[in-house]
Every structure is written in C-alpha cells, then in structure tokens.
Length: 231
Image 1 (tube, one colour):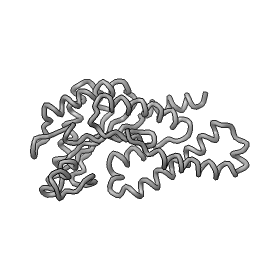
Image 2 (cartoon, helix red, strand yellow):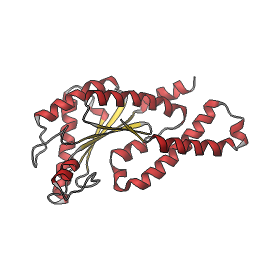
Image 3 (cartoon, one colour):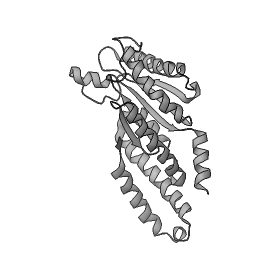
Image 4 (cartoon, rainbow, N blue to C red):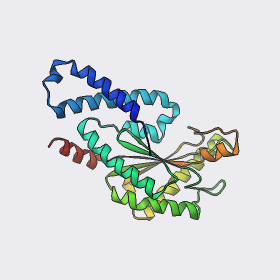
C-alpha cells in the first residue's frame, strides 16, 4: 500500500508550529488543537497536491483529496481507511492501492480488470477479480465509491471518452449485481486523460487502459467519526 506519509507529516508539523505560537491555541484542549491543525493541514494538502496533479485532479486522486475532513474526526476516518486498504491489498494483490488523506485511490490495470478490444464487456478474469473486492466493500458500507474509466490514446478522443464511460458503468453494474447498494456509486469516463504511462509503446498503452476507484467517507461515516472525536 502506497502512502503520501512524509509529505503529510511535514505539512502537519508546519501547521502545528504555526498554531502553537498563537495564544488561543495554547489555551485550547487537545481535541480543539487537533481539529485546527487537521483542518489547515487538509487545506494545504489539497491545495499543494491539487496543483501538482494537473488533469489528475478530475479523477480518483482529486476526488479523494476533495473529501478531506481534517481534525480528530479525520483521523478516525483515516484509521478505518487504513484497515480497508490493507484488506483490499490482501484480497487483490495485483491492485495499486494508495492511501491519501482520508480516502483510498485504487487503480486496477488490465491485469485486474480487462475488457475486450473496443468493448465495454467485462472479461471472465475481470469479473473474478471484482468478486474479490465485493466482500471488502460489503464490510465497509459507509463509504462512497467513484469509478473512473480510462483508455489509451488509440482512436479519437471522442470515441475513447464514450468507451471509458461505458466501461466504468459496466464495473458499477457488475458490483451492484453482486449486492452492493447502487447509491454508493458514481461513474465517470475520462478517456485519454490522465495517462500514467507513455502512449508510445504497447506496454504504456496497456497501463493507461485502466479503471480507478476513489473510496471516500459517506455522510454517516463522517457523522459517526465526529461523534467519536467529541467523546
């Protein structure tokens, strides 16, 4: 599991140093101080990382960063996301799992979710891999799941945009068919945007043909975390 730990720690330390110099924070309790540091840290993280993501801000990473709650409640959510990320890695070792902020970015390349050429139909192998994720998603019902479809640069951008939308929708339909609540899902096709490898080689194009998930807290998880933080 990949984390952006060093950067987050640096931001939090900077935020802590700034706030500690304020008399108001010196007189606050630990929960209030944690909330203040978390809120500013979340804002800085979102701003700096968002500016460095380019078009990627529209995809799974942007969605995860956009859901930052911060503070003690954010820490509670982050702990639950740590557990879920580990379980995803165990269930599907070939997946690229990134814990960012208070969410998870999950990248499923062609080795995990493969489609037939120019089609949005899931292959038998793709269905088998998605089946491995269903128990994990069922165990954490208070999360929202945004699904993003991508293609390589072969063909027209317009065609690829439509194809990527259809492929993301196919993944959603399959997971709903396995019993997951449809209200948890949002899909989007981004076509040739956000390449993670060069489109100049067959290997690179294969990496770009992928599906990404942004797993974030829903309103119930946020409210429960805030209650726990207030204890």
